[in-house]
Length: 332
Image 1 (cartoon, rainbow, N blue to C red):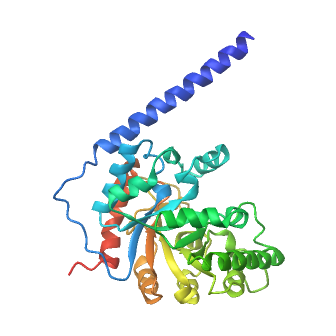
Image 2: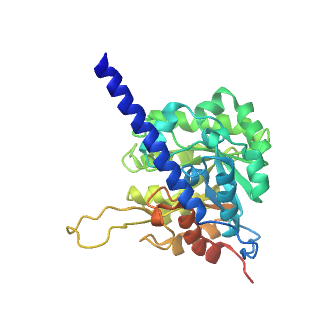
Image 3: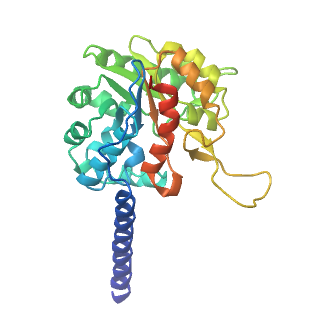
């Protein structure tokens, strides 16, 4: 009994210690990002909205004042909008918290905050709402209501959990499910987009990937795409070719650069690649930006998952803003 009590006490102390350390980390980051009234903002383009994915800021939006200051910094950097996740504007399950923490993209405690008020006070708009297919099939009206409450007409499905992307039968069924849900949303003037990762590059026939099948078997009236070039690059795909194939069906673009942050000597030829600030990596984002604009993309959304400069997501967002403002803003 004494041994068990001691173990529990050690675990409790470790948890409290971690929370104290994390609070100190967040406070240090936020103290460096006060908003100046003289901050110059880039003028918005008439065609393309620039935004930040909410997952980027999950680890620092642990209270209302920090969340608002973060959003105001996003606005001051020249971005127009934020892309929200339904599992971050409501209290997430323990499973979601654990999964995102493990993936290096923690959701934080934002689910306890009033995001309607935060968005309004920040001056940002909401470009879209991330959800999941199960929620949309179970209660589409609830998702529609949430999207409309944030004045967005776009809902994005962020891939599938524990899904067999190597099965042609399963991928065909997924396409039909997407069509069915997309049709329901369309009746309520909500657009449905599908967001890829790298799993969709699984071959389901000799010459077709799961992503090829999803593109071909979904109805453009009801289903279109939020294309993530980072994950397709990670999977070794011909990204420009896929973007050109999507054409006008590529409504939103998740943009991330890919490179490495290790300095000093290392063993040739292996060097770990990961997400990094726009223009800081090796992806040909200039070419991809040109294709996105040719496709008439509605919005470009930054999602640098981790490895932020100085461990600071706001600094990372500000650094990437230089690329975003250059390619998607009209400063004339």
